[in-house]
Length: 167
Image 1 (cartoon, rainbow, N blue to C red):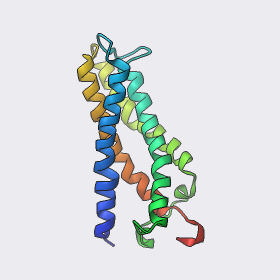
Image 2: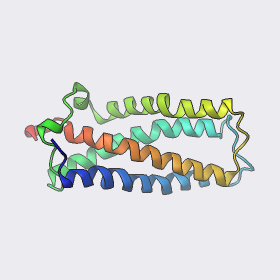
Image 3: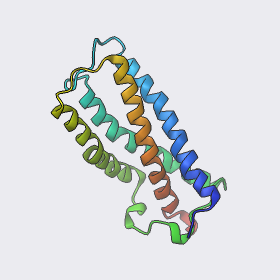
Image 4: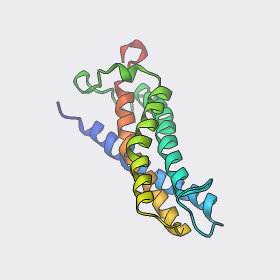
């Protein structure tokens, strides 16, 4: 069964492109606020590329899962988006878990399969400290990419989650 036009727009634009743009700006601003006075951003250390990428890889999916799950439930309740048809829902017991537990899982998965390989590659490549402007752009694009990839999955889980009253 194919997604409806409304669901396709919901996943690609409202839960893909818009969160990507939001996270591009937000994480660029965060990186600027944290590193604007630095002479460079080293790969390792208290304020570093490695620590920042790992933290973003966990926090972005976790916080997005908690926030987006509540927003999607509210949109369904308000009739702005229909629940997924039964054939398109995830029938895993996983979606019945709380948004914070799904967020913990997703954050750990993004660290393991996204951030660690990236940091490892930078380490193997003997990355020198990033110029601050380059790091800000890198961090903003990293967060935008993560948001574009994880937010539609989170929204799908939220539309698949059991609702009170059977919705």
